Amino acid sequence: MEFLGDPGIGFSNLVFLLIALFIAMGFEFVNGFHDTANAVATVIYTNTMKPWPAVMWSGFCNFLGVYLGGIAVAYSIVHLLPVELLLQTNTREGMAMVLALLLAAISWNLGTWYLGIPCSSSHTLIGAILGVGLANGILHGRPFGTGVNWEKTRDVGLSLLFSPLFGFFVAAGLLLLVIKLFPNPILHTPPINGKPPPWPMRLILFGTCSGVSFAHGSNDGQKGMGLIMLILIGSATSLFAVNLESKPADLDSFRNSANSMDQILTRFDPPSSKVLLVSQLTATRETLVGISSMLEGRTSFREIVAEDRKLFREKVITANHAVKHLVESLELDFTPEEIKTLSKNRKTLAKSTEYVPWWVILMVALALGIGTTVGWKRIVVTVGEKIGKSHLTFAQGATAEMITAGTISMAVLWGAPVSTTHILSSGVAGTMAASKAGLQLNTVRTIALAWVLTLPVSMIKGGAFFAFLRAIL
Image (cartoon, rainbow, N blue to C red; front, side, top):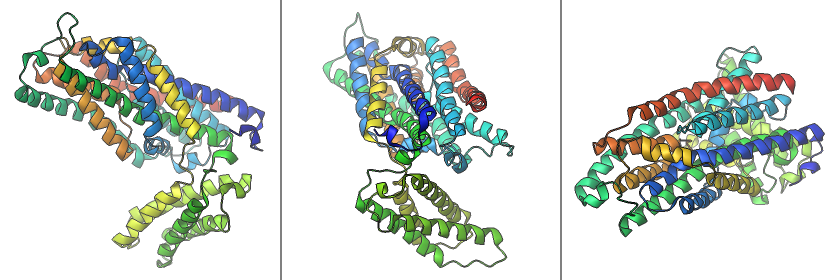
């Protein structure tokens, strides 16, 4: 890690970097014991595993999930912010932005954990991001709402809205199917005197706990990665604006992708009356040509002057955004094959700036894994005892976790951030409803209220923290 090798880092930026990294690790640590408690609740309350072995195993699975889960979700979170703000991450404003996100998310997570309320770290973080974006737009005198990438927000919002509903109804349906296919009373009655489930069910519960923990790590861990990359790019721009570990073949691919997109755009010559379209097309082609020019004859990003790496990053983000806009505007008659080629080349080019160093992944994995082993009991008690009117059965626990692990895994493949907390809580509630065990309405109401309030409260907190930090930094 060459932080001091960055000629532009400065002492103040170095201090900010260390503070921000510490707080980011704190966010993942809190996320560990706040969210992952959901994964161990079912195996603890069905006597499948003793509490401490369950918690330690869940922490290990979270670690693996972060390390092996990829980075698609990380940059889905980052791109909730508009392009203009992403290009400002090396300013004091960028520093205030990242600190505000982290402080807003951690404070809400700690508050709900203290009260034993299952609450989504995903909702918290996304709300803080939206609050910061809106506050940034307002403080710059722009129309309300221009500080947020609403297209990405819509996609993320839909995944957060429908995943708990999916968890409730699918878990309920699956449990009814299990009751019909496996009517053994042992599976559908609460454990007696601490007796563990039959071995086949015990293995299933162990597997579903492992799956939920791994899926949680692979989804939630990436959110921390995205924030840390914003911190690193904002504080040590020349070292992290582009992936310095890219191989010569990678640079060839980046250059070829830029050239390919430029060649597709060359066939269009819109009439001069469409002034805005002509301007967008010209600017996009100039940006793509600039990217190709900066890579010409180079085999490594290290060969680009340190101060110019930020410029390269800006060109890539701007070009990708502009090409996407040109395709979606429908003003140019791209063929299906051209649209497919543009999409492929955009993804290839984005790899030059959308990456996460191995040591960042390791830091997040350790923070999330270790955090799992601390403070888990408050949330476990709520999930295990207070959602339904009766004790969790073996079949209910396995069903709820199976649906949770599957839903989160699909979300990771699609690059969509979802809430482990709300999917599992909804799954448990669905199984209780399906088995006619009944729900404790006070608890369900509290969880639902937290689900509704988390987004607006986090937005307000994120915006307020941003305005304050922007004024003092």
